[in-house]
Length: 223
Image (cartoon, rainbow, N blue to C red; front, side):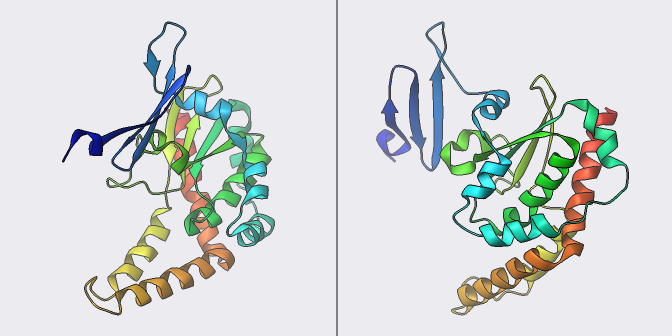
């Protein structure tokens, strides 16, 4: 493969260079000392939009996501009181076409608003160098929640699914025909559609997400 097919410079300006390495988009920013660097999670957070603005601007699955947001019932289990005073920040990596994110983002928003956690959103594909720090089995699965301290230090991450939801997805995939089967794409589309519908209405799945994120945050705060 020729070098120009591997690394393509898409854009160069006084303050940044944008590279496309195969399907990986990387943005390097110029420092005050003249060199170039990759942005930190804290810098991504500072430049990101609020989760409220993101949901209001969604062009896909907006109504479904708002339905989850309005109908999710926050458990009275002491989590909010436990985490409210830690000054946490949530940085959510997502895209609005993602069915999992359609369900998960509004649950994160409910937790964040109840606990007064500043929560912001970045789109995965705008700069893949961020999601590539949080790959799942080598893939760019979303959503990913990067959990930051008050001063912007990385405490940990959650995502892309609660274990119980992952098991449901795995069972659906196991029932699909072989990828070489002519009916595979149709069967896959049907399975994704049914799962997406379930995401929008099944509060048991919502609670799986809540409990999984709760365990993650509590575990990080005990460290």
